[in-house]
Image 1 (cartoon, rainbow, N blue to C red):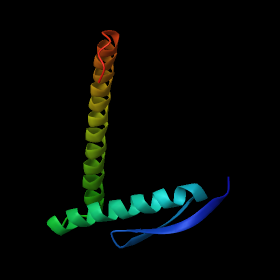
Image 2 (image 1 turned 90 degrees about the horizontal axis):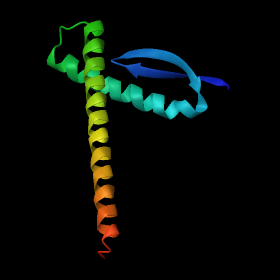
Image 3 (image 1 turned 45 degrees about the horizontal axis):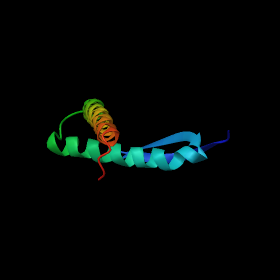
Length: 96
């Protein structure tokens, strides 16, 4: 698979990254999201180093991701319960 080099900017720092053509849009969106999160942290703590800002942003993003993962699991469980109830209703021959 052929790699293409793109330039992304995060917290006023440019990074040249190679990725496949199909990954470019996701990488650009990811960089833009990271830039926003790091900028928010820098605004609230202007003296914090870039390294610490990056770690704080990473922790916030991972925390949000894991929380969404938990919510999806909960929705899946609720969906399974609804399907089970629907099968019970169907087995009694009750129409909607």
